[in-house]
Length: 461
Image (cartoon, rainbow, N blue to C red; front, top):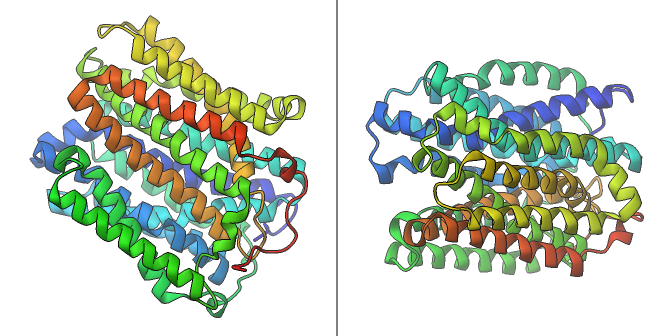
């Protein structure tokens, strides 16, 4: 789906990144506002998790389907519809006067977020055919996706402290309206395969139900525990549905997810790497924000400000030096070095004293920012290296799905470890996730494949 003109590609990219930033911000902006939401709407401690979980379940469950729908009916349609649903749901969240209304609106917000974000990588890959321009575009997207989390903590703290928690949702409305208007103007309709090219209704139901149940089982672990009958039953059902989905894809004439895509080492390796990377970092952001507020008694705004070095480092590197580093040292080496730097930062956090001041925390934030800034753009290039116009939406949706599953898994594991063994042990586990990710990058990824992307779509054969 190219932009309407060559010069308009960068305007279109800015619109896509603005939409992505709004969605990424929402994943973390709520964290800082949770105490205010709890006291205002009367949530219990266990029920409060549903303000986050409701969003994650629908978001994670629908990403793969939304990405494939972008291939079938057009990425512009899916993106615009997703932004419209997300904006409407943000209004409902901000206007919520009860627990039930807020949780229901968060479910709807996850639907819109999944639809919009699932196709963005697909649009970028198709819109920027030149490898140099594509690398620059990926750098801009990577900055938006990776820095958005820490920006969200700052924005959430500022809005909660200056106004009230309602504004962490209402701020999305003017942004969403602007993105909708500009998207309709600068994004061309592009090509669509048509539903007959892969409208696997049964496969869509199986994978969506499986992912939703899996995310639900994972996010409930800190409350219900991993060995509880509820968690085991839900997890078993999710695995059974996933097995049925795989069987269906192997037999279907026009599968939703051709299994042949996983023969590509860069696609498979980058997605496994991303699960580990996001698991460690997303869980750390969540736990460290609680640590700063509860252990060091930071205010909501100061907590967000503490994460600012991550944003600055990511911006400086992903929008500038990252491309030069890749040119001189190679994409795989840059990922290994970046992920290792982030792992070192988490290890420092695990070894810091419980009553650490910000002078101890600051180097951790810098290492995380540097690591993400140099590694994330290259990781996205590896993930999308095999994409073609006929399956780019699917691969984009798959990449976003693994990130969301990784985030949910990491949050559940690290929250459970923190509650039973303490913050520092949890930070150590997060560092271990990133060490594993670095090893996968070093041994699985094939950098030469970035120079010669496939000309034909991957099939089930």
